[in-house]
Image (cartoon, rainbow, N blue to C red; front, side, top):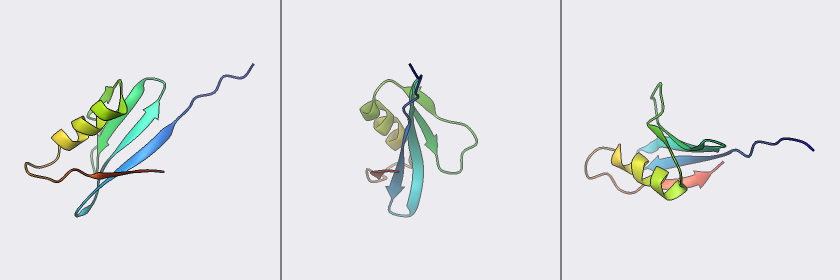
Length: 69
């Protein structure tokens, strides 16, 4: 039997371009803001990760578009 790690990446786009990303790995959904050296946090669901990413955008920012890569 082979041990596999399922990983996926979603890039978040705002009106000015890329604002962050969400990476799925065995630990959960990791949120990283564009240009950041470290991640914001690891969350148990994609919906919580999306909300966390949006919460770290400037006040009044529109909801970003998430595209899987």
